[in-house]
Image (cartoon, rainbow, N blue to C red):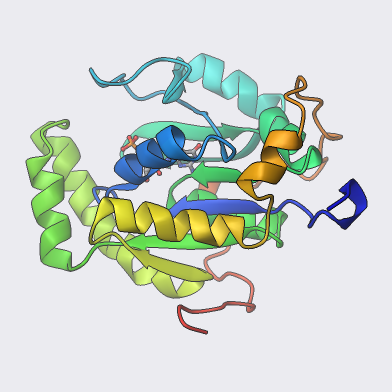
Length: 233
Ligand code: 5GP
């Protein structure tokens, strides 16, 4: 396939309730599917022991985060459980301009912002096998204090109800199976691994910065656009 015949790169967003296992799925993809570009978010949350700055997140202060917002350097951003999270714009736009498949792991508010500003993006909802299992995972994972767990549990119901806003659902029953399914969704419309290997690893040249500024999370529309493809559709 020559460059002209290459399908246009499309952004894929992975979202789902806190505790559903997004990080485990992403870790597998990071290890096994290096042609898929994973955006590294900025956050004001405290680093967890197993996390590496610059790999899992860029950990910043609130004032550093605010500077990024003021400079229109975030594609989307949201406040989640008391912390700020955002997607650096230049890196994602650069990868897309190179025709690379890009995966964002973001929360529901962020997914809604991406849908509003980038309607071609594919939105994938990672669902737990059951609500009980989700609660068990959230309480059992031992990375958060009691107050944070409470906030995340309260948020989970709203996040579960949002599944219908997504193009696809992947059930995280087994992390390897879920990761494979997600890679399949990315791969079906993007570069194949062999094709991606042929794309030179040149430095990122960001696409022109969009002027439309993402609206802050609190005033985002609650309804998404109408073009949705449910699982099996
Ligand atoms: P955690 O603190 O567990 O790593 O992430 C909390 C939530 O923030 C998760 O739902 C995660 O997907 C979301 N998140 C991580 N990075 C971003 C981001 O850049 N933007 C948005 N909107 N949410 C994010």
